[in-house]
Length: 432
Ligand code: DLL
Image (cartoon, rainbow, N blue to C red; front, side):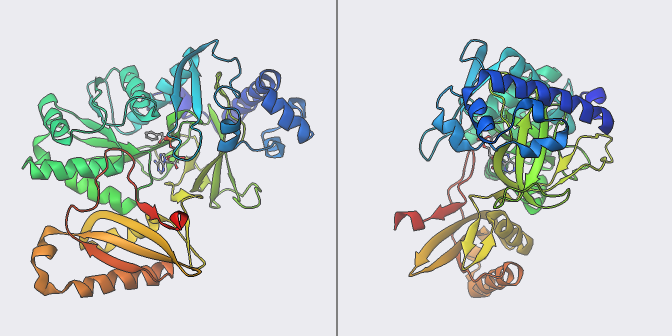
């Protein structure tokens, strides 16, 4: 553990600390951010009304659009005064969101990333290869400062030029690879093309996140790269990577409760759900200075447990994120997450782990086409009959998810490879 005292703090002490920090954060946003004062007033609450952690449920939510409406710095507590860094989320639809950090915010971020990297086995002697994008995206720099905090040797490569990355990992003795799971797959494939056996590398673990990935994908990446793969979660509006991370037990991702308060809500009614129920993750930051967020709706779907983990960390765990409320496909009335399709495809295991879902509309009905790559062997060995495989995939999808999908087996290496977040879904419905 990077920080034994904090990471294994008894729950009672943790709750007291959370309450104290929550009160301070609420007072700060009420006084310093006109937006919060306005929405609290509208809801008829004041920071003084919050007398226990449970009272948090009485406060209004914050959503991404609230950040957009107050673009760029409207939700900052003190303008740019103490802000030493800005990041921004991509903003594929409409205005991007801008997030800011004081020097102390960066300190906390580095501390939490050090916890996450330690969870994945990083130590002072590690060589950490960071292939998350550097720049406005929080991935590169976020992991970077955590790795430096540990005293590891950082290789800040960013994404792209995959062959060069493989060469460097081999030559510089990389022990931990940090990138998106889809890029890890891309790196593994490139390694094979270059006829480099991962066993020749010093690589022993990977810290993968920024997009959903199933446990079946974990197995494939672990086999291909001969490593142990760990999940890391985060979002720019709350901090960046390090909002939750796996420990060696890999039974959920620990969410540092000395810095965040997590709730799970029903995404439709907004009601807080009991422990163990699946819903939307809502996060309140309790130590952030430049841009605290109160009850921020992440749109990410998960469940949480406060049971102490076998690793000794007491902080609550969230399940692997299954998807986002806005990525959920509704195909003829059935709710489907791309990660569920991924899980089924990889379970069948007769194709490559590269796939895309194409959603379209015929008349009033939504259609789903699953494109998945054949292995080189299947492709050259056509006698085996691809129809059988198509049928198998279609049936498994129907049996497990209850939807009929079209399955299209495509030639090897025809689905675009990613060096960041993979685009798994092509939704043609918007173009109609
Ligand atoms: O993706 C921060 C990050 C960087 C996390 C590097 C992990 C590693 P955003 O670009 O703001 O920030 O995107 C945040 O990505 O709300 C989730 O929907 C998704 N996401 C992030 N991590 C995971 C994960 C970064 N481990 C959005 N599993 C989040 C599933 C994830 N989805």
